[in-house]
Image (cartoon, rainbow, N blue to C red; front, side, top):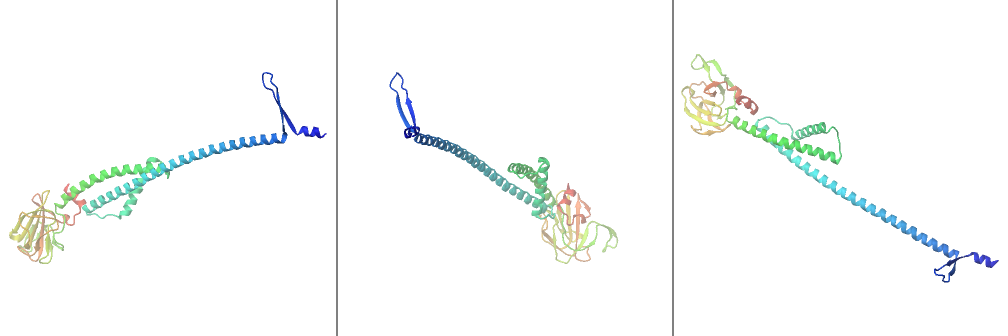
Length: 314
């Protein structure tokens, strides 16, 4: 009985070699065989698991490299956007400087700079969204938006450059025409028919009389050349300045003149002093504006700004 139980604990193997050689017999304990098979199974499973983990690791490394590359590309795109933002800011600042120069040239008040920037950017945003048809905060959307803004600013820069050149031309023309008070004070006699205080008769008054204290500075109302600086009969000491576009100005009844015929004078430059020379009843400036040698009312030319000058001269 024990022999049978001991026999059942073994497994016999027989190897039959070819060519009729003697067969080989051997036996192995079942427990040993099971352990060997279990060991081989464990090795196979461990190898398979190791291979699977290696594949997953390689895939993860590949995904990491892809993500790393995408992040690098996004970083480059963000850097380009940052450069575009800096460029747009510089362009906007430059255009605002040009705009301020044009406002100053036209002697017009201008709004707060920050408010004007926000207004321009809102206008450009509205134009962009009107074209794109949607609002987006994606990187691609931002790139398209900045590209559109850059195109609009480049176009605006060209428009501003052309407009600035035009304004500068207007300003040069404006400075060469009468456009300011020769002296500040009340107008005591208007342009047109009046009763002459010295001759005691009605006579056409070819200018306006501006009252001021004796010795006050009389200043040229525009750039030009002095064509007369001497005694002028009833005008007393007088200065005549020839401007551009057919304009002339006359400053009469001076107590002293400080320029000579042929001198170039600029708007606001002192040319004489207030007096009461010639036919005069008190210190004042007789101020005339002539266009093509014909006297015209000087009052529209007092405190004239660049915008009004453009409409009048051109």
